[in-house]
Image 1 (spheres, rainbow, N blue to C red):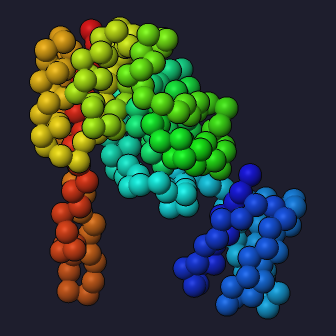
Image 2: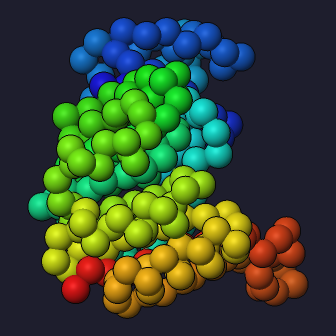
Length: 242
């Protein structure tokens, strides 16, 4: 499995597998076959790189991307509001880069995720290998709405697709008792449609959140929220089958 090699002083990092070589202005970094997380490997001119085990934020930064992936703060809300655990079976529609599916797999859940674009699906499979969750995340090519008759019931359904409101209408037949559906949308119009669909099919605990996050600035003058922007990413709607 690949490791992250970090040069703290230069704020530099490279994703490399055992046996690989990286050439840069800090020298040639040759990764030993038996390297372990925490070990320091030096380039041929003595610059130190520390090996680190990959974690979720590292995957977000280093996955091959096929579009804008879901942000970690959105993923955190999904995990927190649905209570994803290692005992869960999850249906994920709209794989994309696969960041959400990888996070859910790393929580220990079994994930079935659908991606319409065959090329995107293949990239997502490679990303699952990188994340070490290929045994828990099944990336399927196709439109999930064409496969509903062949699917089981799930503890959580996550939706990041344009036709999410249509899928919400089907979730009572896809969710186990007490299970959650989580819908991500960058636009308020799609969010409103998803909320209406959830109410129409009798889902409970319907709640919508706008995800906004601001970094803090600390300097000699004082401390305040960053003026760089409000950090809006999108809207998350949650509902539950009871």
